[in-house]
Length: 97
Image (tube, rainbow, N blue to C red; front, side, top):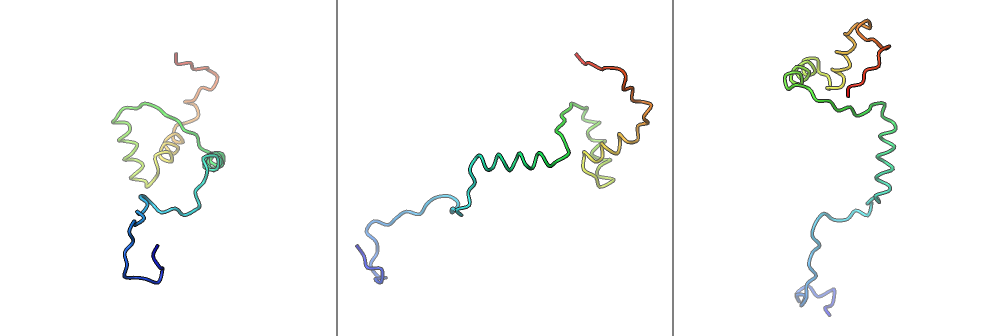
């Protein structure tokens, strides 16, 4: 064993450094991360909506969004607002099967 005050003698068996990022002691459990994700999701008024569109249509929406400095969802909201209410027929049930 080496004296802590002795700076000239090297350790016979040096302790290797740990690999990776140093621990901060603030790691969250899986349950804590899941609870935080659910809370964030609950507070958002938006919902995920996936659709398949043509590449040209996507490019046009992206160009519109960029020209007006909007996000894609805001651009789609604005474009839908341009459609007059008479084009929506809420009485018909539309089943795409």
